[in-house]
Length: 179
Image (cartoon, rainbow, N blue to C red; front, side, top):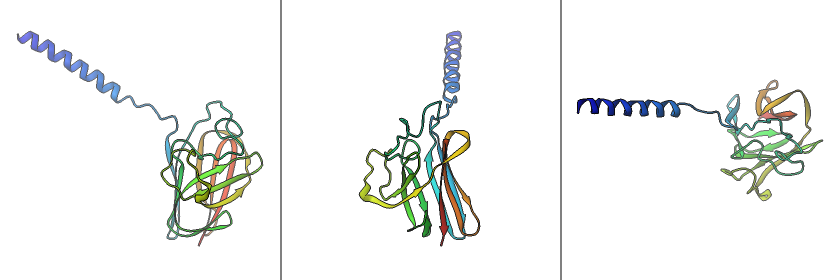
């Protein structure tokens, strides 16, 4: 009886150890969540987005971000931008708050959209009537290919910053002026 219990305990211990090693084997998500942020004085801006990977696919003008169509500007949930104070975004005044960030990419210009509809997945339920702001930006070609979609917020002198979106061989920048 004692040998049977010992054998049974040993088997349970091996099964538990095997399941724990599998549980700890975390695989990276295909489009991990990321955050870009900047602070100027008492104004704080953060962008929460998911980072899809190129994986050899055609990005802009292809199936991932077709030209002329609203794109969620990342993957999974629509990208969100939060501002704690009013700013000038791409040449237009913008009230403090949280907005979804959508884009309409084209080869020679992008429409950058800040929308009031929050907590949406993708751009499937995008409603133009809820737009808070639209600005136009010019895409630039990058020197090297960027595998993962990336958004940065970087200071550009006193009370100025740039929101830059990069992926594949494309970069789009929107200037922000803190008030």
